[in-house]
Image 1 (cartoon, rainbow, N blue to C red):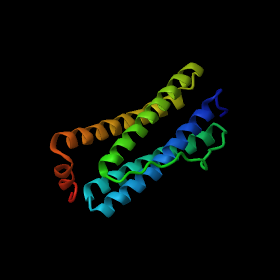
Image 2 (tube, one colour):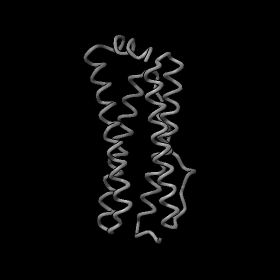
Image 3 (cartoon, one colour):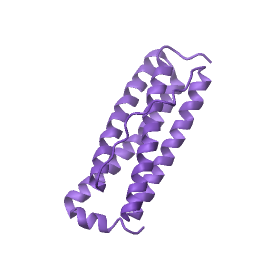
Length: 156
């Protein structure tokens, strides 16, 4: 099936963001494991696997639309020197991803590509859940303090 105007470009932009997220969350999972925060390690590893699933679906859909998946370019992976810094950077990343998906949804509605629009709508649900989780973690740190928060992250 041939893609409608601009759809493959949007899909590749989202793919780039999702592949970057995989790398970023794998790095953050490893960092949390190294710091001894087992609960955070597991959560970041789960996020990475979720993003792998999104990436795989995007690649399949791009190929279905007779496009070429752009898997080489990645954005820079955000790093931090504390769990709180990771949350802040990941929250910013997820907000940018949500904006990209909103633009994609609007464009797909305009060109009447309802399959891709539905895919983006499903993805934005996960993205908004990620935003909520990061906001909640940062709010908890603000309420109980970083030391108390991190003490809860050592064991699952």
